[in-house]
Amino acid sequence: MQKNEVVTVTIEDIGVNGEGIGRVNGYTQRAHRNACAPRGELMYTLFIKDSMIGDVVEAKIIKAKKSYGYARLMKILTPSKYRVQPKCEFARKCGGCQIQEMAYAQQLAFKQRKVKQNLERIGGFDAEYLEQIMEPIQGMEEPFGYRNKAQFPFGTDKQGNIITGFYAERTHDIVFHTDCALGVPVNREILELTLQFMRKHHISAYDEKTGQGDLRHVLIRYGFTTKEIMVCFVLNRAGKRNFDRRTKGKRVWLPAQDELVKALAKIPGMTSISVSPHTEKSNVIMGDSFEVIWGQPYITDYIGKVKYQISPLSFYQVNPVQTEKLYGCALEYANLHGTETVWDLYCGIGTISLILAQRAKQVYGVEIVPQAVADARNNAKINGIKNAEFYEGRAEDVLPNYYAQFAKSHPGQQARADVIVVDPPRKGCEESLLQTMVEMKAERIVYVSCDSATLARDLKYLCGEGYELKKVQVVDMFPMTVHVETVVLMSKVKE
Ligand code: SAH
Image 1 (cartoon, protein in one colour):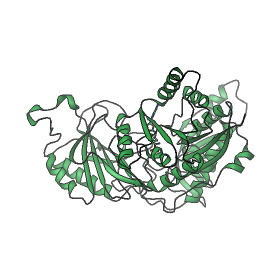
Image 2: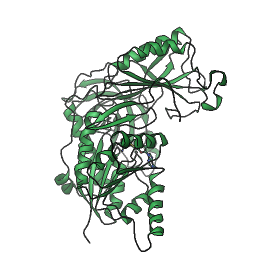
Image 3: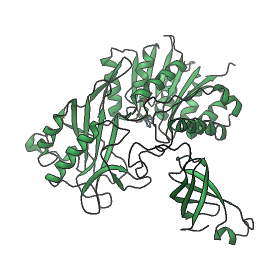
Image 4: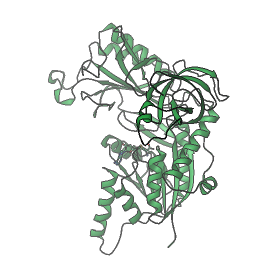
């Protein structure tokens, strides 16, 4: 097998990133020269983006390793029975969706299997046991238009036109489109208005290579229940330190800024328009502060009966329909009766904490982003919830410190928790945190995870420290993509 060779492949499997996997007879020249490689022909594995199980495809090899390679889909010779017409014409090019051309039922089966395989392979759990305890995956009835948030980058095409859209997979090349099928219709109006404004007033798009240019990204958030809209422009401008004193700190960020604000403010539901200054050369989308240029610093939304105010820099689940199912499951697994002390680690703006607080004695939330902690405290207040307290810091510092402090101030006693909920980012929990969770002898640990590989690793650790895996619920928060959320219940084994 070598680069540029064209092969015919039957796709038999799906990779973690949604790509099709097929095997062909052959070997690379390198393998041939390698004395350790078996002589003669061997099965060569190819990863082919945009192909799916059941397809027979013609593909061109773009990268050839010893025993596997990557190929580009050239032609579908026989389509898989799971193939559907994509809703968006950019589905294949755009990196936002990976599996839009796969029938939704098949997407769900793939995600359930992916979580199960990680729990088996990385977590070391028994396949039959998992079969018994894993509930069927919760999918969506309408798996499009579900996102309440989008962050669109700005760039310049080869002809020098300003464009926006999403990055193509694994690149920062923008695929120009303003009408993402996963987002809400108002995104398009906001993007078109912004592009028009930029052209008219010669506002440039940021160039990642040179660090030059004005506008980096726009964040758009939409409250599904309140229909409130937030727009935050991420600008390549220095932050607060350079404030213009002549305008009493109220800074004009863009030429003719008021014209843009006026146009956007006319959109029904517009509630908050802000800018986030961000000059650092990095992949981080938002700057670390923001300034309101019109309206309020937040939008309001509801999950169930709880009301949340969300500011531009805070994390908020992107799929409100599925979030209710996810949190409902976390609450069920927590099994609260009103007497419990509960920790909600990685609590964001306190979404899960406040739902738990309604059924617990006391909830402690921990979150690293200061703005999110401020939002969490405020959210407790606007809902009249008094039994939720929030700490700012890294969960892996705050909890162990709390535990150590408690021992000092209560000689002979240990800090205890009845239930601990964790919802970490993809990298999962640090071992020092898991260790403290074990020391606090929580009866139940509810683990909400967006990465089943690190989830499996952490569950393995907890199982070695006196916990057992009781329940697993996979929730499809991100249809058309390979991502998925999982909620897990771990119980302390009775001593
Ligand atoms: N449970 C919340 C947020 C989950 S997202 C919800 O459902 O809305 C994960 C959160 O963890 C983010 O808010 C992120 O800012 C925060 N975070 C990331 N690393 C952290 C750490 N080391 N300690 C505490 N919080 C962290």
